[in-house]
Image (tube, rainbow, N blue to C red; front, side):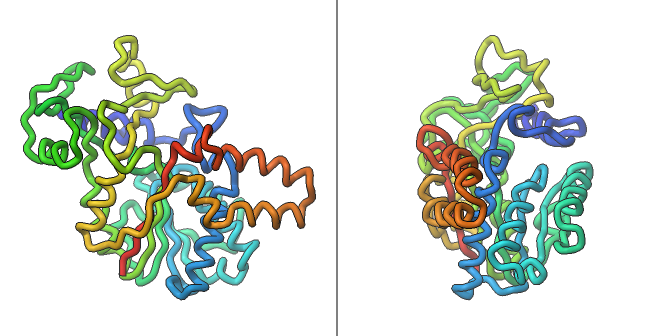
Length: 329
């Protein structure tokens, strides 16, 4: 089978890694910004409120997370909206795009426990099902989970019994590889369709996403497997692919230039690309901490500050992760 089909089965098949609930954080296979601090979602909430104040979002806007897994991120956003501008909690429409019913159920239960009837949460299996006039879309670590093809010096890969063989001719993959100056590496599939779906879903929207990678393509393979906080390059000869298949996370660095091109080609305006550190500071994460300090005291402030440092310090997640932002109208 083609490598993209192999990766799809690994992550999204009937028994795939993301088909069922997975713990994230200390007890799982990896950490995310969401699992690190509520102030990640809080900063996005502050930004959403600023979009209302500038007139880009209306008070009945749809606030949508794509690929939510636990639902913690959108719940953190909702919690801080309630703290900062409580009347918006009732007027916003909160939406999660999630293909798996088991995860939908977990997310629904979490929202019910957290907010009761105060927040109305709607699920859709795909962006195609959602129709809105005005919205804000957020995603964390989504583009690295799109299936990809592997490319090496003119040939694409297929997989036979977990063995990767480069002997497939694929004109589209080769064209993308040349465009992004890659003689080897991952070529993501689905960015173009995803961008078109978003433009057909909502008339006026902002989309923000955080992920690891760079604007320019890496010169080599970045594909790797995460299992119990250990990361192993996919082509490591000691990696037991047959044992880890569908039981661990498989991911790669995002080429953000590819993401940018997909959305621009779909008629969406590219707004900015920044490190997570700069993005979160610009959107006001430090101001939120000062509010916490005033209301909750020095001890709790210092506890949350240590978590926020992981989000923004260059030697943690601050430089490795990037934010990309688009607007469609």
